[in-house]
Length: 458
Length: 77
Image (cartoon, rainbow over all chains, first blue to last red; front, top):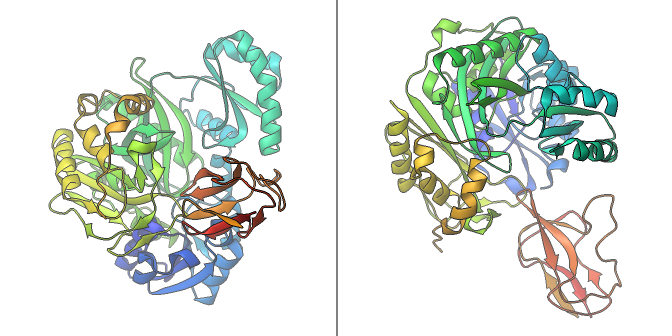
């Protein structure tokens, strides 16, 4: 078992990790920048170490300062949370080289799954369906023409070294493709120092479905799926578990394929395998693996009763998986919404500031994951996530009703938040019927966004 | 001298990307509406447009420096 953990993060996820560690009797060390001296994670950890100025690259991304904080305080382990250094293979290696346990997979596993082309090849080798396209980098435009036979149009040309939606071009016909291919190669070379390209068929109306997995380096289990189809600019805003869109047969195939891939790469820790699901074709395709805990992990915890962060800490401490697949059962339905410091009526403009009054929702089936407290000033230097409101009920319908109840109890005064977005979505017939896909929300916002005016109390 | 204030709290940048030249160099003239820098707030970028016209701009905030709303970024004559 781990003895003392440094939490290399901030905000709600630092609070979440500190809570899980303390529940297991593990001592905790928080780190903070100049902008986070008053933060909740600093207050609730056993110790806290200052690691630099507000700019993330000088503090939360400063590997030397973080490793020094860990060794100076006698930590035996580091949890990276999500974002910042969570998927930085060199950081995982640097922890190991310093004698610290990195709570997550090996640097090599992060490297393999972080390289989009290598991950796609690993998935294909493990018998996991991938989006039709190239099985690796495309050598040249002649090779590309052969791949078009499988993909058809529209087709995506993606930079092998890209990610997060960057380095992607879409061609609708052969003429567009032949013009775009050399441009994409030149752009990728300029932007990423690597002109390598790969190709994928465009799945027009797909759902985003992802499978939560746990591995101990030898064996692996899944904790069923989440659906995160409601996205804006490729950022998830509303997540649920399980997915109402899947039949039991497809769910079983999907989750089993995720376990195969997790085992095939000798994965250790908590991970998420992301898929696109095409309703009309009733088929799913691997897109990528995230080698960290995800923002939306609580919906899985609510339906399975598993504390995923605690399981990560146990696995990192050297314990084999405690759960057999047959131990993991789904109960009810959970929904999470992300309350961000943004004004949805003004193109989601960020709105940092001071929380004057805070009223947290409660009661049965409600969980509020947040670093907020009354009087806290949200700094402008990091992401805008203020709180994750998570609800659990017997059915999806009851979960939506409970979400509206919990939202109406929630008051975060002094800031503008995305709360009006979720009240409107919960009231929308398409959302209630789960008749959505990954591009649905952006279309809906074109006609609805102006009405999503946040209440703003002085 | 007339100050140009930051409209938002965040991180001030003098150029559009690390490898690009600054929007304005010390001593440049400034027209109404000229972009003099960017403020990064919660991972989104906002242009800072001058609400004054003048000459000989002098920056008082360094590139990548954190600023509060209302901070003086530069002065123009």
